[in-house]
Image (cartoon, rainbow, N blue to C red; front, side, top):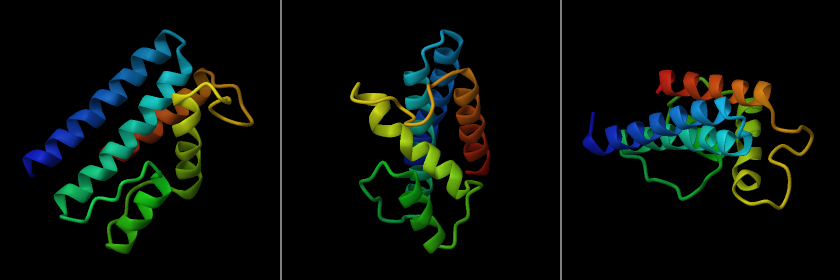
Length: 123
C-alpha cells in the first residue's frame, strides 16, 4: 500500500471514530458529516492506490461510478450513495436540515455508521 493511500485511510478511520463520539453526545449533524467524510476519503484512497486521476468532488455517487468505470466494485448501493450525498452540504451549513425528509437522530446516524464501516471494510 502506498504511504499516501494509508494516510487517506487513516483520515477516513478518524472521521468514522469521530462520528461514533458525536452520536454518543447526540450531536447528529456533525456525526453525519463525519460519516460522509469517512466514506469520501475511503473511496479517494482507492483512487490514490490505483493511480486513478482524483476527481475534485464530494459526491459519493460520482466517486463510486468512476471506480466502477475502472472495474473496481465497492460494497455501496445507490440508496446508500443517495443517503450519503444528501448529508454533505446541509451538515456543514445551517441552511436546511441534513436530511430533507427526516430529522437526524440516533437511528439515522447508526445507519450511516454501518455504511461507513462497510465501505472501509470493502476498501
